[in-house]
Image 1: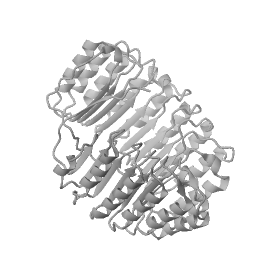
Image 2: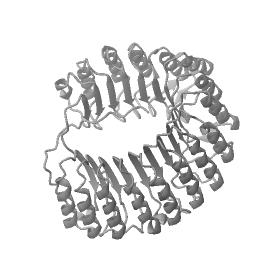
Image 3: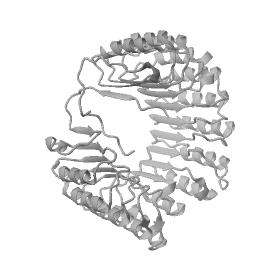
Image 4: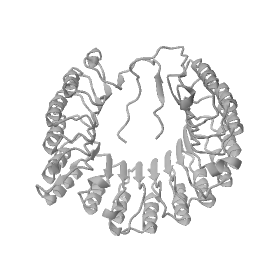
Amino acid sequence: MLPTPQLHHFPSQPQQILIIKDFNPSQLLKYSNLSKLKINLPINQPLGLFNKLCKDLKTLKSLKSLHLNCSGQGINDSNIKVLSFVLRRLYGLKSVTLNLKHNYGVNGESIVELFKGIKKKRSVEKIWIDFSGCGKISYEHLTSIYTSLSEMKPLKYFYINYSEVLIQCEGSKELLENSFRRLRKLRCLEGLLINDKMLQINMATLSHNISRMKKLSKFSLDFENFSILEPNDFDLLIHSLKSCCKLQKLHLNFLQFSSSNFATQNLFDLISKALENSPSLSNLLLNFSYNHRATSSQLQKLFLTLQTLPSLSTLDLNFSFCPNLDNKTLEFLSKSLMNLKNLTSLKINLFQCSLMNGQGLITFSEALRNLTSLQVFEFSFTSHAIQSGFPSFSQALIHLKNLSRLSLRFCDSQNFSDEDLKILAETLSCLKSLKSLDLSFSFCVLITDIGLKNLALSIKNLQCLNILSLNCFGCRRITKERVEYFKYHISRLKSLREISWEFPKNLGSVSFCSHQPQQEFSCQSTCSIF
């Protein structure tokens, strides 16, 4: 695993959003007017710190959004009951995100109390709570949790995760399903995120509920274990989604798809049917990473369906490590992209798609140059495509005049050289509107000081750039002197607010020259549930 990049935060304009990476007691007392708060509790801290945090939270009377990450902290039932009491006192709270993963002392009874505490907040619209890997929980506890959720009338989005939890058979599974059915009473519900680990509920019940959620506009399905599915289960779900005429955001995650019960052909046919003629769909994510069973023809049919989505503005496709994705398949994707005139965000991961080569990248580049409305573009390369296809790709990028965020990943690309980096640097110089740039060259062993110099001279002219991330881990031909040169030029960019980088370890200590002091807190947007 690669080392974590070093982070540097620069001051930005005062906002009512606070992100604290390492919480210390009494920090919150200075921010009584906060509306959004995100806290990551440091690992292995005394439990008294958590209770101190809860006490300080009570002072934030204006708080509307709370994001608390206390994964693996050793928190117990009594701590959760304190948190539940505090949440009842935050009268304006609208969004709650709690990461309680792997706190083995947290059991079902206290989690039920937590949901009851949130239920008393008549204003809560968003809930994201992960208590996977916690202590014991029973059907009776899950029944109480779903009952509490069904009584939160303003609720628009919810996600709960109880995977890796020892589920005891106390209570009735039938009662659990009945309580889950009550969720259809949430007439305001717009967003739902389901994963296979929480399907103690059968698919028929889930599908029936979804078909009754007439306002549902955002749906995310995260599946890794297809052995729990029968062939007609997914068919039921797809038909229920088709009845959601307001569906705008659809995320389907089928990482490492494999199932003896479920034919790959059925899966792709059903997904294609779900996508066909969905006029309101504006945001689509498909993750089939490590899918060794999908054939080229199945992928082609799926990609061809994309052109029937006229409102699509955000598209995220992850087909990394799919051995059957070839040039012909990429041609079908390119044809569909040519018809998506409203696309503003495009993310594609083709890492380790070994059948794709330079010709496939050239075909894709012809489509890319026509996507002039793109504001966000992320692309992960397969090394086989770079040698002959990268110049065409770089030329296509120049046409994206509205681009504000760019992420390119060349990880393990043995063919990516200083000459390619020079071409990329010339392209970046033309993208004057870039505000965020993320470049990963990890283990691109042909990159030397010459390439890094060209990159520095290019980036220093991006006067709108706020965020820069650069990963050169494993680039063994880069020297410490050239890294110092790079960082000196980057530090002169007055617009920069955040920098992260990673260079080879053998460079030793490398100083950072900054025109602005670092700060303890960084003000940014809080992550949305969906």
